[in-house]
Length: 181
Image (cartoon, rainbow, N blue to C red):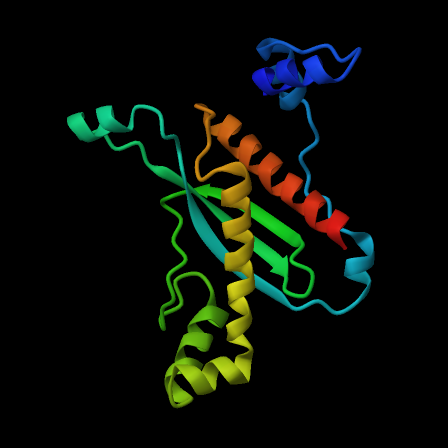
């Protein structure tokens, strides 16, 4: 960000570039609550929910490979409006949080019921058509866009910094989607 603002200041008269410390303090104090278009919530909304993994960092990848040090990754659980692609909810966790489908309720009785319904409906295709499951691809498109625009990893080293960095990325994506409407 510091390099970006420094380069941008060459093209914009009067723009002063901020140093890393100033940028860090300002970013740390940003309100990162997810902004959702209020008109969107005035109507019935069909949502898609999924999660994706985000690499902790690309730095030192060869060193981790050489010394077999596992750095891990974090997980972003997202809920979107399938019509607009706007992110409605976001939760960032570590890799230990599971979201596997199971017929035994290990957290969500509704999820277990859905898995049983899929098994009893004559296969995947009839179940997907009946439940509208095919719309899940739209959330995959959101993840693809966020990762292409903002990168597949976080650069922050602290857990709080990683969470804030991801919240900023997804908030910026939401602003881009809102502007395109």
